[in-house]
Image (cartoon, rainbow, N blue to C red; front, side, top):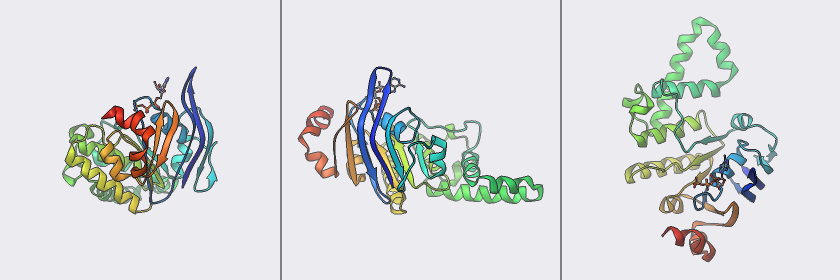
Length: 251
Ligand SMILES: Nc1ncnc2c1ncn2[C@@H]1O[C@H](COP(=O)(O)OP(=O)(O)OP(=O)(O)O)[C@@H](O)[C@H]1O
């Protein structure tokens, strides 16, 4: 589904990422782990073309190395950021409506130009937004509130719903469990599994080892910008280099 080969990122003289290759298939969760500064976010930026990088990228078998970030999103490579990014002045529902409107493209915009259709189109979008929000674990009672006024766990779910929009082929999440307590983390795990089971490919950067070991089908370990190991969670947990370089240090 998504394949990266030989990715490299430099910030001036600093080599943040060097010769990193991995792939993720439909219906699979790939975890990316590594100590602070290992290059995980740089790897995301490189894959989604938000950074100047070397290497090559394929999406659904087609080379997309030269496609800009917004073009990749239009092809279904979506990402949610470490920090929640909302339109703070809009309600939760209107944040979702804005994303659905963007994903609907020109067909819907054209229909909005016909005033007699506008109210109808708006009502349909609001209904779609409400259904999606519920599916992503943001209950109806929160839809009229501003994102900043809903609980943090729900904000994280909202940010995933907004990244997903009308659907993603590949969804990349940067530390989705950051700051979450146990119950919210369990809800997150259930949501991510359900997206995988719908056939999406997920790439998840995560510091919570328990969560990523449970959730991921395969894991890539980065250290100092390089790939230290890759394999199933079981293989990674048994890998002496990983234990020494990362898990051992974190324990
Ligand atoms: N915009 C930037 N300018 C200069 N250096 C950067 C920039 N972004 C990241 N770096 C450096 O690149 C290296 C890799 O950083 P990156 O954020 O990719 O690591 P990370 O594994 O995501 O870290 P963390 O777990 O702390 O988020 C680090 O040494 C970091 O200081």
